Length: 282
Image 1: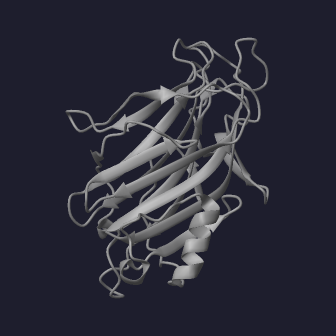
Image 2 (image 1 turned 180 degrees about the vertical axis):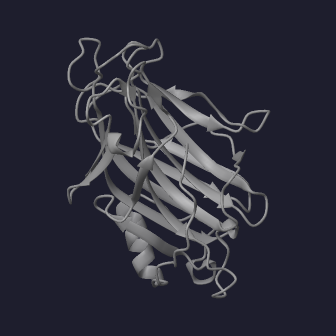
């Protein structure tokens, strides 16, 4: 998982409880039974049919075959089509493995505006994703390495650690764990690693990813199509990041490994729609 240096961005204005509850219901986000909307100050941070307004960058899952120009930002793109967005990796079919990473970020204004720090909030977010083609060993113009997603809160003022959770759907059809769902773990050394979390049969149907990250209680939840994955609460140290506090929702795709001497490799695409993000006081 990856992100660019974090910038300053103000929250959306506080919405009334009925508006927040309605948006949550339409997204399949259920407010906790213990939450009293009158005193927990639930806020709809954002929502959309596609990922317009998100940032798209080159992620860190990269490989360049011998003789190829190194992977760069021109190898990835995001197309916003109204009903959904299409994330594309290795768009020129080069001998590379490229990683497209789109994310929506909100940055603390606390204590400047008297609001509550994002590190003291419970974050609940979701979106739908699908593959527009089925990866196969028969080859062709499109194939895949992974589809990924996550929700994180960066504590640049305190721990200088990234708090959150993420999944990776293994879609390289030549791998023995084709279709496996991996989840992010911070590992014993704190560097982070992918570990087994479940299975999702590769297909071209829409799937729903739902994330909960609660830094105050150090608790996370992650489900795909309502099926909970066994995710640990992750704390991943980062170097060179800012001193702000920012939360970000991520959708990602990594194109297939091309081979050590490849001069051509398939493109990879994933479609994403209907994202919603709520935050409430912890």
